[in-house]
Length: 521
Ligand code: KIV
Ligand code: ZN
Image (cartoon, rainbow, N blue to C red; front, side):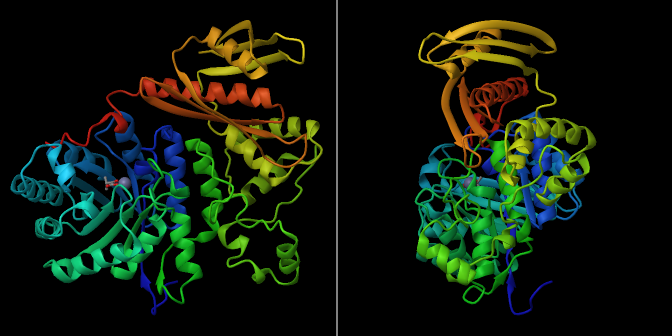
């Protein structure tokens, strides 16, 4: 329900475009559809679903999301050339409400890349925005690196884009350079100065290089912006983008000083945060605002005492407002499939029958090995298993010998494209031996960039979540898995990363990270 005393701020989510652009955060087609569905369902106004010209995979994902979205406007990104814009329109035109987002770098540094004079760039902006507007009624235009663009030139190009038919003007802080006072002032002055500015929506798009993305976005709203561009968990290149959960909860909690509202159902935040962390392979830091594991944990004695007397002593938002239920003991090994389905639904997971069957087997297996199974355990199981069905490489058996007497040895059986293969390998520790065995069965040149282990719950029988990041010829992929056996979780995470690498290798054409922004015409 809208509140007449509050201005509506549109939430534009770019997890699937700017977020996925983060090295290693590649998502599969099905994962993108799942995240888009969750975004649509939680009330995001505009979903930037991808960059259709970048690859056939991106094009297919944007088209499919456009066809399936029920509520949100579906937007695709295009550089300032007709080829990009036409391809973008081909993908988004299936949506109930499509949008083309076209951009060009306008700061002196960015203008130097395509070697365009200011006048030539101004002409190009007019031509490309007009072309987009001839295809689609809803056109967003962005002067990339706006916060480092000369004021006069910025006003000039914004005016040209508005005259050419842009309906939203986005002001990107591409390198996270601005600060709150400047961010508010820039939007305020643009609205006051540029002819036609009152007929379009101004958007803010901030990066977090100096840790100010949330503050800068909220300041831009105070200056008159009515669209915030953001990603779940702040996912994005370098230090990431503005975090959706932070701006949305800030507006909700501090409505007294920021009288704006969004259409987001905040109770869906926690689930989508966990799914984005799982499919992108970018874990959420423990002390991350709103969605971090410790965001609602109160360790110190004074805090716990206060919390028991009155939760408001140390809590400015209730855990349930972001969809977090108190950690509780779930079921034991005697619990049935219906109870598991109900519990998972409670946690935000709607599983198909075959997924539930598979998860039930793994739940029983876990309940046999682990005394107490918590919500977090189920979440780790669900996240580790939802995307493994079509994987080309699968672990079948693993036996590892380790201890004080080396060498540590791993005996491994895998299937590769359905064919069963086995080997034995040694290594410097059980994980190294296991990875060597995988490499012997599936030789590859990918370099391990990151190997990280985290316990899901407390106790020595806790599941371990393992994250593995690998790089091959500039392609970076991340794999994740969870198991009470850390070495098994490691093997599965490694194989998960390799499966993603195979998907990346198969992607026809180029990939967003491999497409240069400088190819503007
Ligand atoms: O950060 C940026 O400038 C962008 C543009 C493509 C809008 O993501
Ligand atoms: Zn960006």
